[in-house]
Length: 89
Image (cartoon, rainbow, N blue to C red; front, side, top):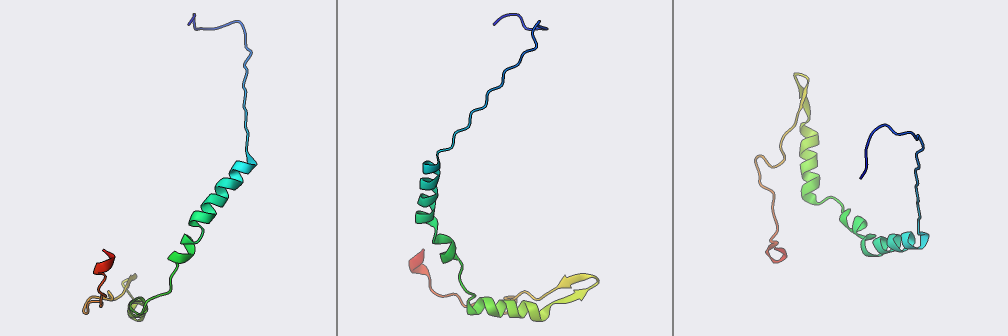
């Protein structure tokens, strides 16, 4: 490397190259859609009975105290019934 400092020239060169392969982009999009397209739909499930009960408890108990919202915790006095899921573990 040579001397660095004020030079005589003020010329600057900038090069920018961009290339998009539409076929590759389409193949990647198809891959994601094929492998993971239905996973979004399968994760959206309806509410369970316990979910509806918990939401109902909270909605029925909402009140404002000194400018702040308060509500009852849904499982404070009764534990939810949990099904045996040992086989899934």
